[in-house]
Length: 529
View: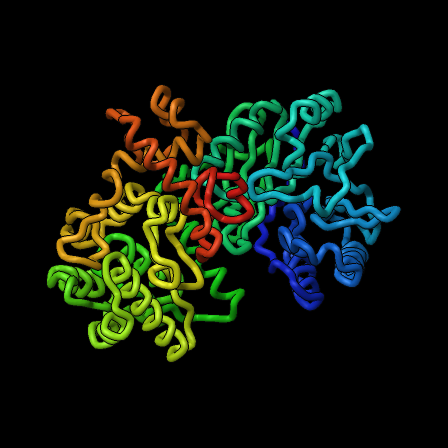
């Protein structure tokens, strides 16, 4: 095994929107580097500015600042080799690069070759792909170390170049977003290279896109080490001496940490510390309350039971028990919306579905008023099943700044709640209802969620047609969904129709963490439904 001590720095940069923040990132890069005793210190892709500052990359002054601070980092490098992600402007073109420096000088610059432009990525909008036909490498004594950036190792032609280069170690700088199926895919790609590899990944978030870290080292055939998920950490690697130490993270733990991390990061970047939400006594708001409490602290969460004449007494009781289960520091207050709702009905002559919608909008107005009172952001609580089918009200239950469970189907919401083991049993077992009319149940308008959710998964994640879904409905990296049951063409056709008709609502929905391979975030959801 190659003998070289390398510190893989799972870095949590500020995603920059001004030059001061670039200065903060470069200062922290140097601080971590100077404390290291390893021969080489590896930081992730675009560590200097965070991934990805989007159209700020079109602003010359922003690029000026990145380059200026990158050169400052280089000038302060010492005898240990320092590798960090940055950008490079050359001949009027912008490149995504890994700068490799030592003793105040640049040793090599590795340019990214393959620019992803699918899913949450839009790199070809900003960067020029590398066309130089060689693999960047350096030597530490007799150990040859090659370098790559993220997407490059997912392409067979690039992997063959690496293999033909015969390095002893491959260092890969990444900004690889989380989804609950992603780590297994990363493992498979790295093991296919069949070279000892250090996979250094970013920690951070950009609205709904979250970067989980989960950096790891592979000896070429097996995974030997892995960093924690959603935490900044230094992973020391030496293939000559290391012992296997990998703690597998369950899907439930990964998803839950992603929701907490992304919620906390979103609030921090928006300059808020407090959250407001409506607590109905149902499953969705219950899970959001738990996430908010863990992300922001219970004393910073203000929840309101917004009861109407259709609200059951058990819903209020369940909400009270839940708050007591989580923390007595959570503010919980019951507000009767009937005196606010009735003037709308009387003055506008409302009837039918309008009566339900106006209740939802009155609740939204109350929550927004409370958010202003507490200088807080409203958390909305709709699940992916509802958002997919348009079973939600614009300016009503869709009202809010962020939605922690936006990418969880209803079935998955229940699975997460069962895993957490803190929720009153009645919330887990009672039929889901918006309680906007007498004896209302979600199943009055939608197929049962155990049927609907696998269908939606096939239509959304697997991009199947109605006929394909009926014929080939199957599980593929799906969390908590049951595909081993009978499905009929009527339910599939209804789900597809609702999915297509509800796009206008999704365009106006609050952002939320991307948890699945196909979320509804604009960067991810590009389907012309």
